[in-house]
Amino acid sequence: MVVRMRHTRAHTANRRSHHALDGARLSKCVKCEALHLRHQVCTACGTYRGKAVLKVTKTIAKTEKRVAAKGKATK
Image 1 (spheres, rainbow, N blue to C red):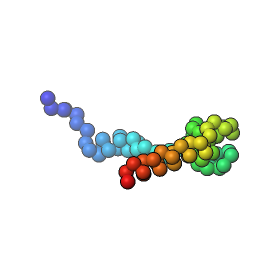
Image 2 (cartoon, rainbow, N blue to C red):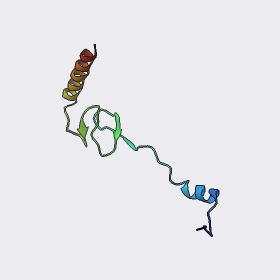
Image 3 (cartoon, rainbow, N blue to C red):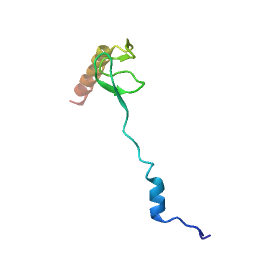
Image 4 (cartoon, rainbow, N blue to C red):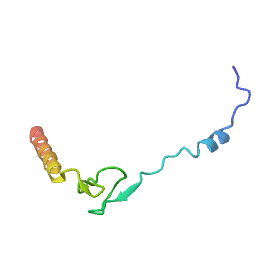
């Protein structure tokens, strides 16, 4: 079947010009003033809306331990 009222490339491109993705919206943390994604915990200090939610030092220590173990395993 042949399309009778075909759209040109320019018409299609004009319609799709609004489909571009915007960058992520960032907010400043109240406590440490680091940038973080909105409605998510600050990865720098582990607070959300001014309240401590995560123990960041514990998480960092755990990742460092895992990386060190992985480094020993490859040697």
